Image 1 (cartoon, one colour):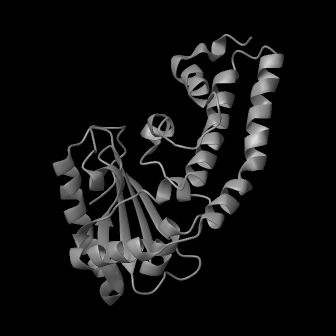
Image 2 (tube, helix red, strand yellow; image 1 turned 180 degrees about the vertical axis):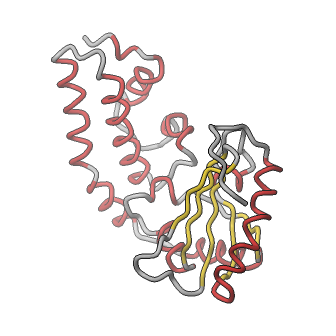
Length: 226
């Protein structure tokens, strides 16, 4: 399988499945006995992939790749983005359970085994057994406060300077910091980037007026700076 220099192209779930079947023998040859399993993640695993969705895969290895070797693979094949992460089961469990910087979205991901599915199912069960205390989530949320402060400071500077052209990106960035913080505080990760706002509205712990702030972002009324 070779990468073709084409622009973004639509694909079906079945076409992504066919790509996976082409990739598995390549990994078997590349990693040999070090290959444990391959799992699809994100929209493909949820069954919600649509025309322009990426194909995201986790390749599980017994031994981690050496330092300096790429631990991820990104290719555009026939107009479709393919993103692959090479990791050990221990690295995976830490990434989706530990309340770290990317927990707010990583923790919601699911796995669908496409090679050695029994191993993938067992790994998913292990994941459910890992628990962290509430204090760990509070500690991580607190790490975001400086970016949150900076983000909304830039928004208010844009309002003060009548920066109509810059306000959309600045507000979107600041709200993203806010949603990341709230997901961690609520111990409720977001499913996917496209659903951040709709899922944020359902969070039980959120600041007063947040829905109105999200409305401003969604309907574009931020152009009315006053």
